Length: 164
Image (cartoon, rainbow, N blue to C red; front, side, top):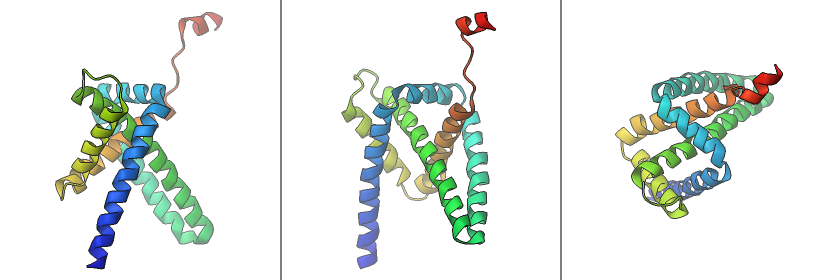
């Protein structure tokens, strides 16, 4: 019985912390979030595939590095932390995109952002479909969009082309 209560507390506290993180990141990186949102709208399949390939590749490398003692485990943990950080930024842009679709008439408010984040997390906590379909899809889309924006080269503006 104590194990069930512990799991329920962990889920509630983690969901609350994730709600706060995604809401804060939306307002902390507004220009990056808008660029990521544009990428997700323009190329949803591509962002999913990029996230899937990179998530599996770097996840396997991180797991493989744990076989090499403490230093390998540290490198594996750093790789996973980097992936999780990129995924959090990508999920924040997904929250921004969903908020604009769910609440089109509301101003950019913290309340509507938090409501959208809670809805997304509740969807991810739905048994079976949420755990094995919805959550991985969200994570891979967020990771793929974040990797796309990190790797993408900035386009040259007209002024920069004059000097070249």
